[in-house]
Image (cartoon, rainbow, N blue to C red; front, side):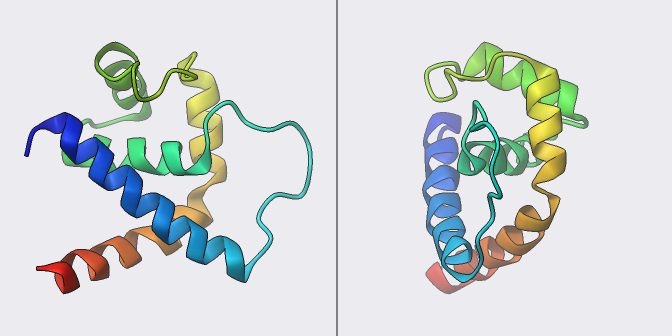
Length: 106
């Protein structure tokens, strides 16, 4: 599987798992809509870890330079880092679901 296919697969799994989490709890409390969707940020974080990128700066730079066709609203690192940090509780719930999903698929 090439990296584009991997990013798409992770995004689809993140969408599926985030949808299940969203049905259980209201996550947004108001304010402006973020530039990236929660699913996009989760995808970037998971893929960045898989690509052995060590920090948010590297993840942001990688996706801005190699995947602008997938993440066209990724403007700068600071917005990504802030949004990523605010999603810690969602990522903590999504990642184990993805691992369980991965092992039940195979």
